[in-house]
Every structure is written in C-alpha cells, then in structure tokens.
Amino acid sequence: MKRITIYDVAKEADVSLATVSRVINDSNVVREDTRIRVQEAIEKLGYKPNAIAQGLALSKTTTISIVMSEKLFSYNSKILNGLMDVAKIYNYNIMLHTTSKGISKMQDVIESIVKSRVDGVILFNDNFSEEELEVLHLYQIPMVVVGSKIEDKKDGNVGNVYIDLEKLAYEFVNSYFEKGITDISLVEDKLNLSMMHQLRQGVEKAYQEKGMKFEKYITYDDTYRSSYDFLTEYFETTKPSELVIIFRDSQAIAFINACHEAGIKVPEETQVVAILDDKYLRMVRPTISSFNFPDYDMGAIAMRLLTKMLVNDEAVKENKDIEIGYTYIQRQTTRLD
Image (cartoon, rainbow, N blue to C red; front, side):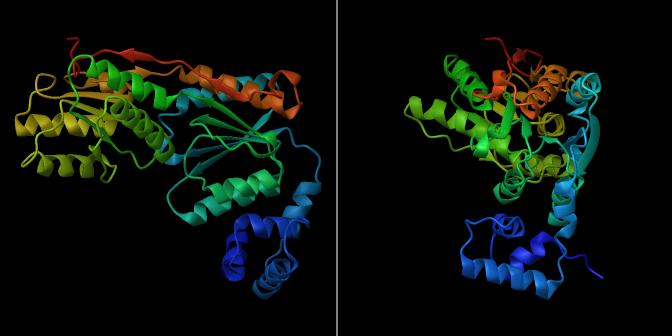
C-alpha cells in the first residue's frame, strides 16, 4: 500500500506544501476555505500528521542533518570532513541524507528531517525547491547552505557559506576580454543549477558591460558518455569557442577527448577551464585548469556557523552570510598570453 505523504495532500487539495504545513501547525494565516479543503484532503487520503507533531514535541536531539546529492558525494568529501570534525568538537551527532533524482526521494528527506526533530540542517545541493525549503522554514529549523547562496532568509533562520560564483565568472571572463578573447562558452551542469545560474549571471554581466550579448550557454545531458557523444557530433559541424568554461571534471575530460578526436588542439585553438578542482584534472593530458576552493574550511565554517545559530549567538544574529575566497589554478588547457 502506498504511503501517503504531505505531497499527496497538497496535490489533492490543490495547494502548496507550505499551505499544508501551515494547516498541520494550526497557523492563523490560512484562509478558512483553504483550511477546510486541506483538512478534507487529509481525511480522505488518511494522512497521519501526528508523527510530525510528536516529533516536534520532543526535546532537542543534539543531531544535525546533512543533505547532499549522491552524485556529488566525491566532490563534497573534504567539506564533509570539515563538518564532521567540528560536529565532533561540539558533541553533535550527524544524520546524513543523500539525495538522487526523483521527487519521492526528496519527500523522504523532508519528512525524515521534520519527524526526527533535528536541531539544524546543512544543505549541500540544489535539489530542494523553494516550496520544499518553505516547509523547513515553517518548522523553524535553522539551516546553513554550503556552496550556493540563498538570498531569501525568512525568519532569519538560514545561513550561507558560499563562493561568489557570479563574481568569479565575471572577473574571469573580463580577464579574457582584456586579452582580446570574447568568444566564450559556458557548459551547463544539471546537478548544480543554482550554481550554474550564478555563473551565467556573472558571464552575462561581463558581456553586457562591454555592450555585447552572451549567446553560448551550452546545455546537454551531464554524464561523461552523453557529454562525449554530444561534443563529438557537435565538433563535426561547429568549432568550439576560444574559451570554454565547464563545471565538473567529467565534462571537462569529455571535452578534451572530443577535441582530440576532432583534431582540435588544446590550448592552441580552444582553452578550457573547470570550475571545480579535482584530482582527475591533474591526471589527464593536457592537465586541466581549474579553481581551488578551500573545501575543508568551508565545511568547518558551516558547522561552526550552525552551532552559533543554534544558541542564538549575538555574533551571527545580524549577518549569517560568510563568503569564502578562491584561487585560480593555471594548468595546460589555458594560456598565459
């Protein structure tokens, strides 16, 4: 028998997840006709919100939930180490959730977080929708987002430990403009859409300030095989840009290999840089230029920020946003001139 979730109730009542949560929590901001419709949907479907209510009634658990995409686990390992080390110092237990594609998985994560009454949450990924985040907001669960910044901090319970990717892209593209290179492409990574949005904003801003329009945002499936197949076919009719910005190692390696098959020389005819640094970028030939982020420090700082938020530390009441610096790593796929 299918387990009835808060998502099913929202669909049946034709309302948002946040509205269902408000009704469950007896919020007075819901219109009476909407409240009745949600309550009728709960009764019709046999949804049992009591488990959530019971969880909310429990005392603090000294437990932190960490949520990350299973496909990005290897990229986040150093950040996770930083988180775990600081959590150990402050005697917090860790509940690790890995997410995959598919709404049912996200439902499970949301409900597990709420029912287990964790003290706080650290989010690694872009998989939560605004509506799902709203549910966590309604339960007043302090959150720290690592890597990408959430601008809307409702009730002041969201912190950010982030790299300013918009600024990174803006400054990097401008450095190539200064070299006379304006033919630039940005390749999408579907696993990090929020970060891709920031990168694209930075590139577009640089172009706009020069009176140009950015038109080479390339999107396709995000596995190595699909990237390689796409690029191999693409290079049969189209030359790559003079500079190609790619998010992850698998896409960058697929690009390099496809260029080799097409007889396109790197970096003489096209240059490529990966945003995320990884050991594989140093193992291929030519080695691939990238950016270095202080991953361990990001994790340690994120956990420390959350511990301060949990005790209402005055030091973080006014500002819960911590920007982390980065360095550019010049390797063989980009030229100095």
